Length: 373
View: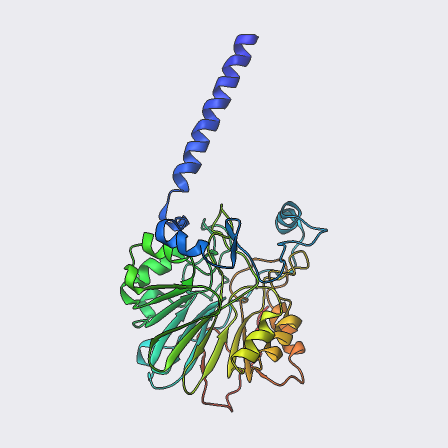
């Protein structure tokens, strides 16, 4: 009996060793990236936002409420009954030919979730592109809704500036970035995020990492402000080793704000006052939950933040492509529409791929989600 138990124990140890080795080898894949080190880490250590080995938010920001935890949130996500998490119908989209757009026109095109193509001041800008059919380390998690994955790297023209808000899988996609590599002239990101791009073969000279409240003036007539967001970072292990951020893009004619991911906080009012308002704010509006109210905004908070940013127009995103939270897929669009009634800004609700012409104040968009089951 003892010999049999010993054999079973040895077999279990061998299985665990093989499993550990397999996981270790899997985590060595380049898509997981590498942590900042050397000169990059020295620069990070000098940041006032980096404390005790991790980046911190401007205000205290727990991931979950006191009543919740990561375990209960995961249990809820996996086992709680979900209502209309994914649409039954295909999402309607427009496939705009980005190659033939007039570069002199200022245009923003939502590419789904938090991905945006932008023409501003004659420059082509791409934000958080995710062209894969999933937003996770494995292909069977967070699959894109049917019809939403219309764009590929081949559809993109040369990109003057690639902006990355943070390193989460639904914002920094390894297959997309590597496919886009020959077309990207400059990368703009928060401190530490450049370690991914350097590992993935990008030249150091085109990677521009910055701390919050930094203004990058890489050429005349375009200033890119790296700004705070209330969120967190981490690809899988080792949380908050890279900085999450929002951006303001300023030309002589336009002022555009992109929130990145994050919860509501006093930074919106500060940004609105410091940068004197915006023609357009592009805001996270989806993947929220009452269990994590500090790291993702409710739609009503998005509306309040847009007011505090002194926005003339609001373009909501972070919804309509992936189901990362347990709310109905179309609820963010319904709630932001209701919350935007009688506000000082104009709500813009384009379909994926539908151009928003920044000079056209009369442009009207449909409530396209109402036609989708």
